[in-house]
Image 1 (tube, rainbow over the protein chains, first blue to last red):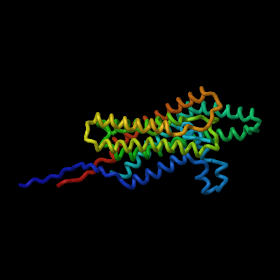
Image 2: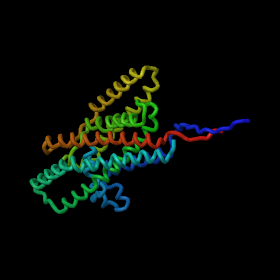
Image 3: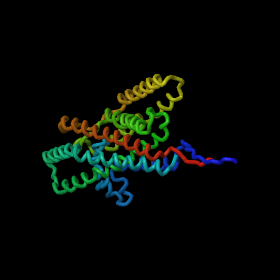
Image 4: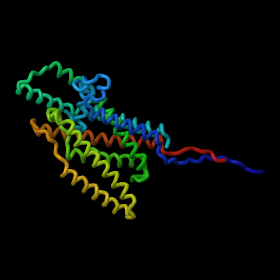
Length: 73
Length: 242
């Protein structure tokens, strides 16, 4: 009589997902610009030139910007 | 590599570490920022400027409210970079598990992306910084950050190709990176803004805020490594063999 059996193998997949890298690069660039460098640029897309005077986003992340070493003011 | 677990591990670890950073900053860094703003207001009053205290109170509420959200955004953006570097360098990192590897990488990235740039362009509290030089200062900061980051990347790629012992490779890598950083430190212009408040306040602010950022990198490495170990994004696809 012939015996049959099954077994499960675990295969490592070392290729890094290109989609994930693209998403993470986008998050990193947007997040670093918003938290460390924006001087009204992002809100100016909606608010126009006034955004550079109001600097809502800049002021919102102001204290974190100073605390994490980014140049401010 | 499984895309969704990789993304989730990366983003969630950054979100947690960044939120913790924001909460801790509210307690330990905010008092120095308050003090610096108080000095800035006094300087403005002495210079004959009109100061609207209600407006300043509103601003401070808005700014303090953003500390945690700012930490969250900062955390996720840096963990995104961390995740990419970890995914590509995982097999070359020392340590026999994901937690040790992540903590080691976090230490290196903290050194390269925070400590080294901060030696040339240290953090400053409010009341230091001329608005008219902001873009110039940002350019200097980014340039030093990029030099430091790309140097490490370049050195790591080159050293990996050398046919030497691990010890020799480490020595060559550290010496090359150190030389690049020292030359950049000497050649790059200094922060052009003059300091008009107490150096004691500035130095204490720098030490305390640097401490919280170092803590952030440690927490990020620990959480990332723990989640990576738990969800194994790189590992393993089950296949059934008959």
